[in-house]
Length: 486
Image 1 (cartoon, rainbow, N blue to C red):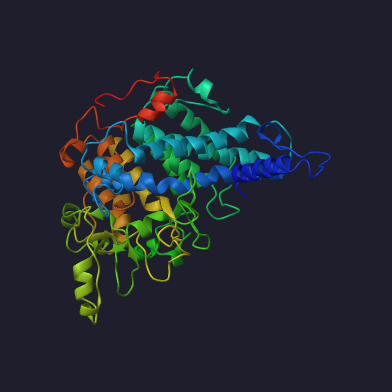
Image 2 (spheres, rainbow, N blue to C red):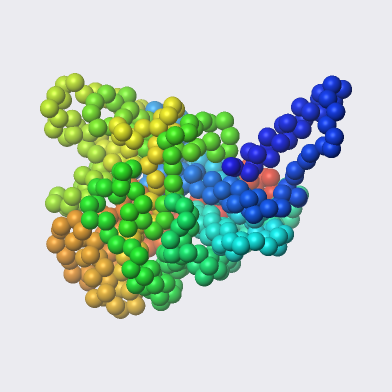
């Protein structure tokens, strides 16, 4: 179903037919290229699947959102294993960093695939095309939001594909322009998308509005954020799932708290041989316990390990600590036969803790290589996040009682007492209690101006964004300036 792989297959077949021309006569010859692709409704649907496909690479953004913050260390087999993540962990990253280049490339591929659909939006008319175009705009907005969070000013390309020669003629657009395009795409999408998805994992009206609320929040457009997030809340479509721990197991996915998630499957193997060879979620396997032999969990690669500082940040009575963080030694000691359980420590660092929200568990293990094929979905936006964003925006507007109501709804879900929300710090703390391990914390620290105090080595004015990959600057003919400090 992935149209680019399909076109490559056609290309490979055509080469083989050409090489055998003396033996075979093919009349008439068949060819399908990018310029004559959109001829049927099915072509648009296949192209949309290709645009969704790049969401599966979001595990890298999720990792960096934790590792760049004070929530986690890179971990892994050694400091040379995923060296780019270790550089980000230590705030020593620069323009040559494979993991940051992956974020840049993967999101632009997603944008290009969405643009490809929108470039050809007028080729034919058919029922349902408006919804496909709305989904393409939602995806383009999502990918651009990732890019602007990571890199600030980025080249803004709308409704067209670009070749290498054209890339050398465009500049980085100010992030205000990128944000304006993201907002417009999400407004357009929300006006067309259905409240409920026809297929799990596809964009909905609520997903577009919730993402737009986050986009407003990042720009400190408090009134706009309150307005659009109120529409999500008042829709009555979403609610907090009653059991917090169930949010992070495959059996309870797509519950009423899910506003938008990325769907994965454990039924198709993954590999390392192409741009994005994943149908499963790579994060749980890579965040699993190295060489683990015991109950409940599966063995993994010990990446993205929670810090002692995060563990100590939680109040002792908050049940979200144990659901967010696996204390491996305490877990083993509590088992009936602890002497039979073993695991190894990677040379990339060890804290004694593992990300218990996204971890390889028995019963949730896909096909070999099962490090790459977890069926566990990534929760991009939960309703709890919507409530906390609305609380923050309302507080900035002086609506303290509304902010307190939203915060205490979340605390009530895990049966802990409410608090008086008399400062923004209370809301920021609640975001960390609720959302740690989910890839948001670094960006929360940056946008609230708290990163330099929380992250060792963080320099204001430099580490607020990541460097543009140097190889991309070179491919653009050197016309893109690097971000300050890099």
